[in-house]
Amino acid sequence: SPTLKDSCIKTWSMDENKSTATTLVELSNLAGESDLEGSTENKPDKVAIRRDLEAQLRPIQEYATSVMFDPKLDEGLYLIGAGVRKKSVVKVYAVAVYSSAFVLNSASCTTAL
Image 1 (cartoon, one colour):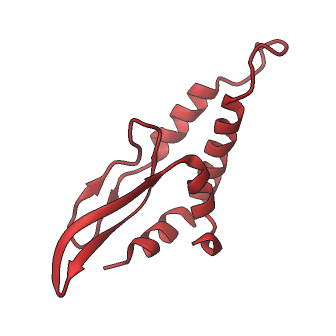
Image 2 (tube, rainbow, N blue to C red):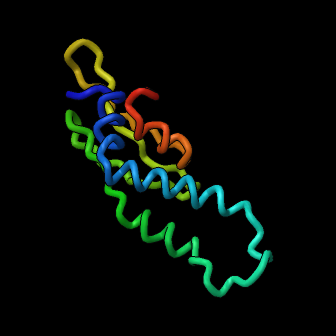
């Protein structure tokens, strides 16, 4: 079965997912800006854009154990990858890594891992 690192790279090195990670980071950066500056009529609804992006994220099934991991936790953490802990030849348990949008953006670049 693939390692946790391989899962992260496979998941976030695809062009579509790189774009999603970049957009999530941009939305996170915009969240700190005040919407009181100027008119808000032509500004995109950041919450709606984020929801649309998050709806495109898919769960990951860990290969060896078939455990499914949700693509996002309620705390705003995103699934980066999944793997299995083995002891000798016995598959002990499945693990997943969740982190912020900033880490997703870094994980989308294979050289960062």
